[in-house]
Structure formats: C-alpha cells, structure tokens
Image 1 (cartoon, rainbow, N blue to C red):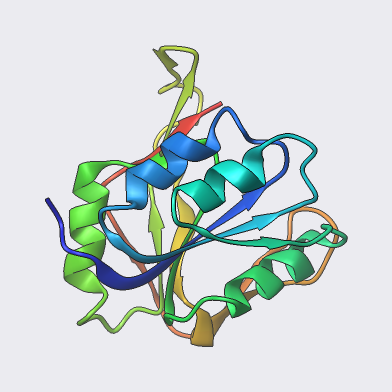
Image 2 (image 1 turned 180 degrees about the vertical axis):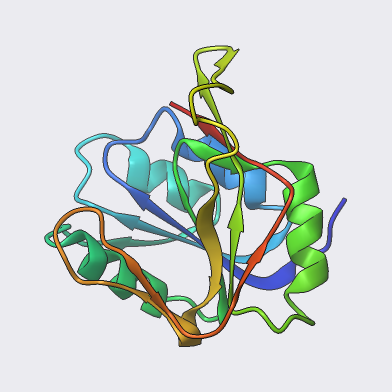
Length: 169
C-alpha cells in the first residue's frame, strides 16, 4: 500500500454518480487531498463524493479553462493530478508520481492514456499511448481561459511518465 503524498487530485464532474466512487477509490490510498468540483449535477455525484471524503465545491462551468484554473486554485498542495471521473491511474503511475514529485526539475508531466470502450482496449489508430499532461505544479501551470479545448500555459519543462491513466470511455 502506498503512503499518502503531498498531492491534490482534482476531479471535475457533471452527473457522474455511476463513476465518481470508483475514481475516488482509485486515488484515496495515495492522494493527500481529493477535490471534486461539480458542475451543478442533478444526480447524487456530490453526495457520493462527500461520503468518500472528498472536498466538494459546486460551481457552474462557464468557460472550461477558467473553470479548471478555479478548481486548481482550491488545492492545498502545489502538485496536482487532474482526472475526469472516468479516468484512473494504474498502480505503476501512482508509484512513479510518488517517487518523482519530491525531487524533479520538471514542472509538469505527460503520461499515456489507455482508453477502453466497454472491455475493449483501443490501442490502434493513435489511441495509445496518446499522452496527456495530467500532473503539474499549480504554481507553474494554468489553462488558457477559452470555452473549449483550452491549451496549457506552463513554465518549465515537461517530463514523461510510463504508467497509464486508464480511461473508461
């Protein structure tokens, strides 16, 4: 079992009651803090997240980049791992992150995405590894404040991790 580390996991949600519990449970043993920013869900997302120990904030999403930056500002740790409710870090990725965040020159990291549709791993056609930046220092990172597909604005260098984010599409 991993020890909790100085890392905040931030999960953005909207009507994710069928996925939020598994997402939180996948990081609970390891993350020092779990924050859920909920976009006014009409299901039980908020209550499930709170029952599992996450700090929950309710905020209507207007502009995606602005919403993400607002969510990351709520974190008490400088290192943030940002996931959606349908994403989970595998054990290799969790160990890698625990090892590197205390001693790295990089300010953000990309990692491979392993996307499943149902039980089928989509590994061809550019779907794997399809790396994305999901781990970063909030003091050196933000999103462009645009409505859709905001680009990252980061100071410093980007490292690359080997463990996967498993994405259940």
